[in-house]
Amino acid sequence: MYTQGLDQTEPLGEDDLSRLSERFESKVAAEQKVEPTDWMPDAYRTLLTRQIAQHAHSEIVGMLPEGNWLSRAPSLRRKGILLAKVQDEAGHGLYLYSAAETLGVTRDELVEQLLAGTAKYSSIFNYPTLQWADVGAIGWLVDGAAIMNQVPLCRCSYGPYARAMVRICREESFHQRQGFEVMTVLAQGSPAQRAMAQDALDRWWWPSLMMFGPPDAESTHNDRSMRWKVKRFTNDELRQKFVDMTVPQAHYLGLTIPDPDLSYDGEYWRFGEPDWAEFKRVLTGDGPCNRERLAARNKAHDDGAWVREAAVAHADKKRARAVAS
Ligand code: FAQ
Image 1: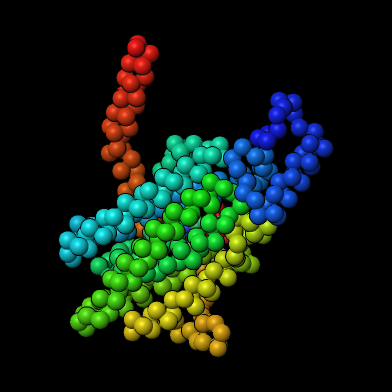
Image 2: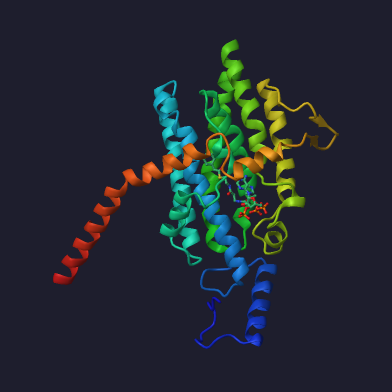
């Protein structure tokens, strides 16, 4: 039992717990931020640690599909933009690991879980980037879905997560625009370029809808997360908002959303059901690139061992010098 917010070492009695719990609930209800030194229920801490860690892992693994095109970008300008974007994703992972650490878990523990394959990260990053237009589709659709999901997280009840999200969302909005610009150039280009853009949309559309998570009826964390103001909208609400935002953009590009059930009812774009069996397969490690992604992260970690060792040796030397002087 965590006892932050209580100036005592004795075990908590029933009365203390209910007083702390009431104080916590009223703070959340009053839209005040919960900070790391505040008392919080264990279940709140667990919920947040899980979500922030999965989010951090997603940013880190999310560098891999686009990283695949860094050496093959079609121009120096495109390469520079893509390098900056991939670096931004690394930065997002680091802010998020830091936010998770405020809840009592270490970054080393989280990284170990990722490398061992016991941690989740977003399903979307288990799909391959087969051609250049995939980089455009990731920016347009994947960053677009990420923004739709993450802007409400800037109002999350947990202070460190909410503050990290403010900066991340600013950067993600540039990412989305660069992706849409890549798609615009291809969609207005030669027939072969238009076909590339359509092919990328065909392959990334459904996985992008799955990013919002299972349907509300099957979401295990939704009720608690909404009650504690971690999530502000349900999975299905955000998925609908994303479809309503994106369909007109596809029309502007002259591309076709690969969904025969798509229709406008005067208020919303109604759409077909994603393949939830495929979603489950990807979550249980059997997506098109799950093994490849884990192998790439493990290799990067092993290749970076000398950097970590050098940093520790440098810190030890600095400490020894400070003690001697
Ligand atoms: N993939 O009960 P719910 C990005 C899991 S960042 C994998 O509905 P919740 C930037 C879920 O964890 C993208 N697992 O869960 C970028 C839970 O499993 P557990 C990442 C999924 O938390 C762009 C179980 O299913 N964004 O793209 C997925 O209430 C371009 C039941 O689900 C975030 O992490 C999924 N798609 O709602 C980088 C945002 N969906 O833990 C590079 C923060 C669900 O019980 C390039 N996260 N699961 O074993 C969230 O908003 C929420 O966690 C949701 C899921 C909405 C993802």
